[in-house]
Amino acid sequence: MENKQLRSAAATDKGLQEIIRPAVEVLVGRTYANAGAVEWQLQDEQDRGDHLEAAGTLQNKTHGEEVKAAWLYPKQWNGRVVVWLADSGKAALKNETRAKARARRHGGRWRRSALSKAANR
Image 1 (spheres, rainbow, N blue to C red):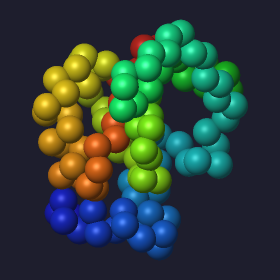
Image 2: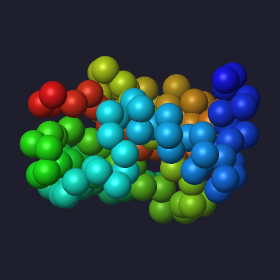
Image 3: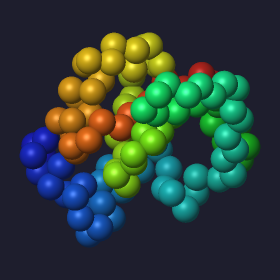
Image 4: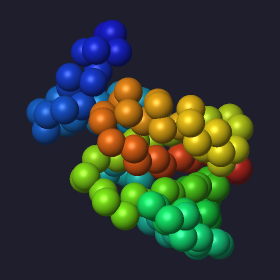
């Protein structure tokens, strides 16, 4: 499936449920229904002017997994989210010009979220 088809599928509820969700479940290795109990532990929160930046850890208590995460919340949020996975983790978001350009290419307004690679796999 090409990038254009994926973006088109992600733009509809039907596409999200029939195409995107199953793909994510394959990548993650389990279904949403079997995700388990997940907790967010906030370690830092900063006001960056047009957005808030929060850093912390998502902990899956059921499966004994955790992943470091950085969440960037635009103060003028348009209801859409970009999930940014990168081996370099939070550092991938620090090049703001590149991050803004990529976010715009993948859905319009600038809004960013990122997950680093799993800390305990």
